[in-house]
Image 1: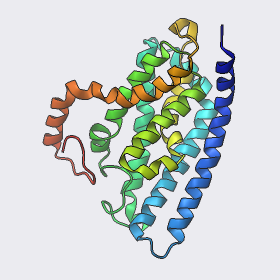
Image 2 (image 1 turned 180 degrees about the vertical axis):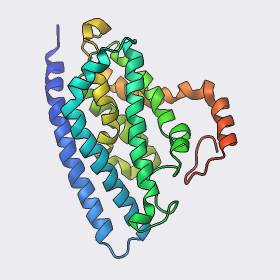
Image 3 (image 1 turned 30 degrees about the horizontal axis):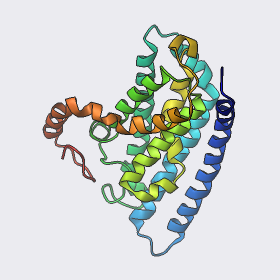
Length: 257
């Protein structure tokens, strides 16, 4: 029997996504105006804001609209692939994360177009795509997707709920690097869109053995992905070796530096 509270949350998750979108537009618009119109702001900070606007336009708005429009038929095609659904979820989410990082790395490399220099203004750890995804971003996302494949095998979260929960996880992760990032609601879309369509490609809850989640499971769905990167510990020697061999150039500190 489905709990009434679960029904209310499931129905309101879509509304919450819309409210986060409105807040994100207002917050990003206000921050952008303050930075871009200020004469005291450096050209590098202005370039960073332009990069963030480019990311939001291409990933959050354009890709988000495409996912909303074609998410269901694409999900149906993915469901038809003869592979375990957990593996498909992880691979699908990883592919979307790689696509998102392609956009962010492109923004970093467009620093001269935005009036700055590569390395002086950036929104990724490196201007090199492979270095960024292998040593800084997607490599950390994969254990999070593994954690979500576990959660979705036990609990029937809606696509909108997963979008919000993973968006919150991403916002908290970004806050650990810069506390003010928690104010940027657009992080919900940067991260949430990585899992939104993969969730819509899942088989029915009855086939997964998933049951309606309770309140504590929503908290678990935020915390478990945050701690999941510990799954990378067995691969640390390999990653450290690859780091030394490739000698990547980073703009920020990395765990393998």
